[in-house]
Amino acid sequence: MPPILLYDGVCGLCNRFVQFILRRDRNAVFRFASLQSSFAARILSGHGANPTDMDTVYVVLNYELPDESLLSRSDAVVFVLKQLGSLWRAAAFLLQLLPKFLRDPAYNAVARHRYRIFGRSDVCPAPSDKDQNRFLDQ
Image 1 (tube, rainbow, N blue to C red):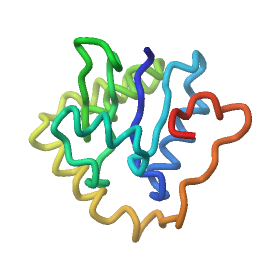
Image 2: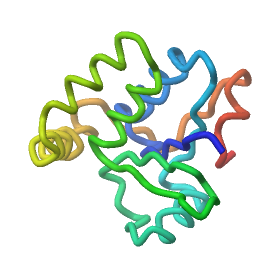
Image 3: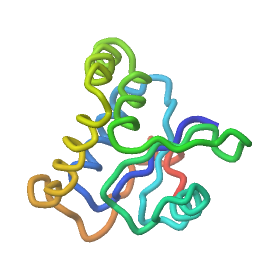
């Protein structure tokens, strides 16, 4: 199973991140599900994560396999950038030069203010017809 990005479906920044990935993921590697979905809640609960915590983005690796794992916050962003290749792989490398104890507080600061800065929708935006099959919570 390809990696699955779990994101806050009503967050303007998170939805822009999903659109950013869709435009650059030439091999259609990623699948997506909003954190508000029962699909995401089931995965997060299985990993001991709080399914009501909308302050992070997650990447699920090896979904439904014995070695399924969950990346969160800056680790999830770095993983996504690496998968997008080229210039984005270089950006991921530079981000990884910063220790996690510095990256995650910066991530948390943006997450705390994301609705105020990037806006919030009342509902999760619907994917385009072309991308609909990549969204697992539809």
